[in-house]
Image (cartoon, rainbow, N blue to C red; front, side, top):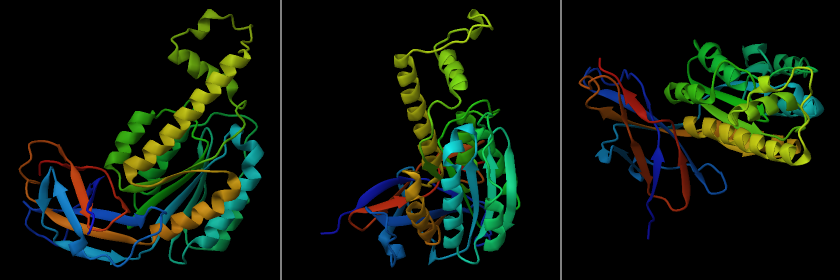
Length: 330
């Protein structure tokens, strides 16, 4: 007996040259199908998929399964908290470059209180490896993670065609940036960039002053209440609670970025990075794409969001794709 497993999926609304009727745009639904171990499932046909918009079954008018080059921004956290692990990160970055297909384009960037583009998009592995050698962690500094992702997604990918992916290596902590988590997630819902996040632990004592400030702000305690010349030293219990809360928030942020864009979240020790990179690069080159006509695209009053649900007639499969479609009046 064939088990039908429903999955709530997300889709990106795009203009299509396939259909010229202005009242019937096509919704393009990129789909990744894997088993419970994360291995890609090939050989599926159009008949294996069912697509529903707002609970109503749609006629699949386009189907393709293919491998294509990928445009990848490898974004590495080099804030002060990464100082002790930066050597391992550089080694892992070179391993990742070796795994890229020759037609894949890769941009290498780091961030702390600012974004540094060490190499623009290129398929030259030697150039990328030489750029990795430039990576270094500052002695101190803020971590503007949300701002960095915002900049890469908006600017670096602005004129890039094809599949767009950010692979983020970070401890997930953000301090002092101009972009909030909610603002970034809203941007990513409208973006066509997938984000794969890789979390690794760092020294919890780094950036402690900034962590305390952020913690006290949440507790609605005024830092001004303590004289400037007095150094606040938290007790052991406060430090333990603070570290736990910060790590939970960091992991939650990374997961939400990946979930919103249909990427994937990974957590592991740095020695596991090569294995993680191999899984990511293997998945990125293989994808199904479904399409159906959106009948109300030109008559929607303002903007509207539609829920997408996809069913796959295979047992024990995992299916992922992008955010809810949003339509705007033409």
